[in-house]
Length: 188
Image (cartoon, rainbow, N blue to C red; front, side, top):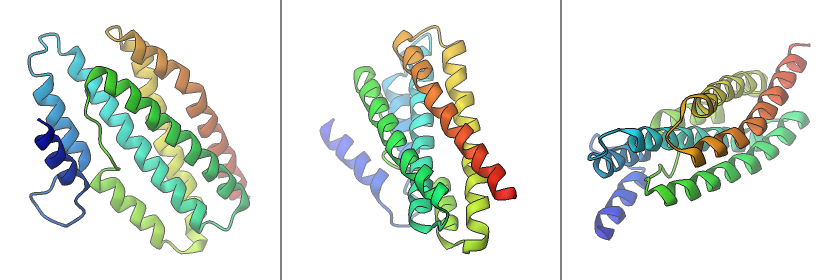
């Protein structure tokens, strides 16, 4: 079992382009499918899928915040990026704690598609970067909030996950409010 986990982790972290290599989200999903195959209610599998999805989303938002911190010349964006980095690192750590209790395998990085998106932002010219970055982060946070609200409103099988999602929502909403304020300021 440890050997398989090591091989999976190696595969998930391998950055060599190869049609055989899966991104870490796919590896996590496959491992969770195997772990929870005998779950007749499918609740554990649904909760595992949710944890995998929000982990991958948080890795992507963290990566984009890191790019903004390095690349943006806008003081407000850099300040918000610092806050996003700190908060999303904490969310990922919280998810890791929840996942460990539930024997859920998580991705260890953003997905391949998300990584391509992050790379595009690294190469954007400074004129387009700030507006495009804020627009992207607004969209990503709206999607994340929707996933968290769904967990709070529709997850009656895992009280701990539901409670944690509810406790995390105010921080995500604060991020979205801050991003929307930046979005408005960039229009002026």
